[in-house]
Amino acid sequence: MTSSEVVARWLRLVVADAELSPYLIGVDLGRLSAHLTACLANALDGEPAAADGWRGLGLSEAQHRRIVDYLVGVLWAAELPDGHIARARRAFEVPA
Image (cartoon, rainbow, N blue to C red):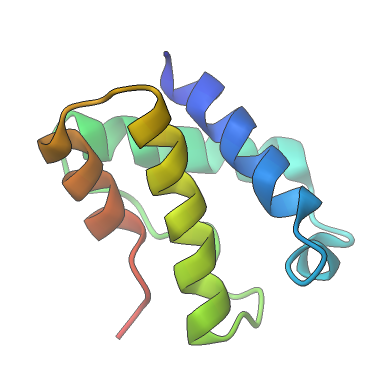
């Protein structure tokens, strides 16, 4: 599964979440998807990821964690190695 396929599935889960979807109103999902795809590809390659695309949307810490959990679920379902999943989680973890 490519990074863009992972992000497409990830975004579908977030958009389907009744609590999270209002934060995406007015957001250019194509642009967000492209940014998240680049960040994820970098993270999976072991390179530093650019800024997390979810920052700046006004999400609570718990909401941000849920978004990252959705990503981990998609990666796990795609049977990626644990090391790749851990790198992706770190790249998108809740900002300190």
